[in-house]
Image (tube, rainbow, N blue to C red; front, side, top):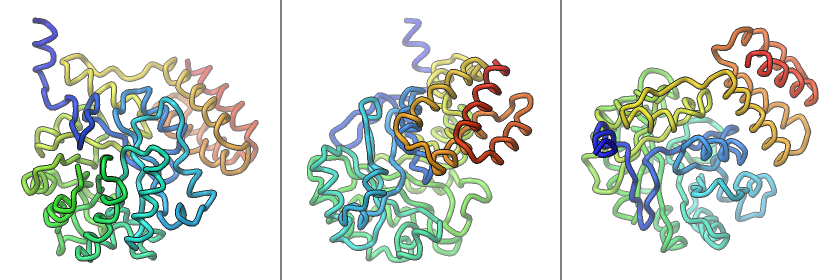
Length: 337
């Protein structure tokens, strides 16, 4: 009886059925360039994310056998279930990339229709395609043909700008082409990450389709996720930058949904997470300048709110050698603990 009462406190945090797969909870880690590499995906799975996404990878890069592109989709036991996010605008390349991933056992493949950065836009991909809905259907059709049994999804924004909000139309379009779920970031491309995610507009997408809609944007603390679910009627939430600063947010949401406080991680827990992340980074990446650059991003985020964090971030960002970054990080979090 007690368990029944707890679970009824916020029933929207629950298992999620997408296509022929049921996820343990409707809490997803968003794809983030330069962030959701394999070590961070493993961290997110360990802290409660039910589905994690790769960084956005070029479909053309995969088809052409690009070492960097294939490195972005590297996986390992513990990171499943995993969604592979592709970008591209040519149906033949995106379809073939989907087939290659399916041949490697991919169960989830996602199409990026929302990335706002110029790197993607110059190829006519990402959010650019929101201005060309007629170009979207052939891409999705090619992906569905290449992934007949897997879970196919798309990630969109509300539209290109405030004068061209078309997320409900795009969602209906991709649903008609066999997409199993759609995730919606509640801003336009023109907004980038400014302003607030528009929950009312996300709710319009939910009303427009019968497939699950996953809400994304401005979920920073656990309560934000519950509010997003209540205000949009979405089937689940997808968390990006909030998970970078606080990887525990997934378990905190689950706790809060069951009527228990969502405690902040102790300093000791932060120190343990940092050590775990360092171990994963050193295990999966070469000890070069790129590893140093990646580590700085995570360490800066994990130190937020701790005494001496500003000085620590300043030292780490000026450091050039991996050994120096590792030593400073271990000393800082050990002392803080």
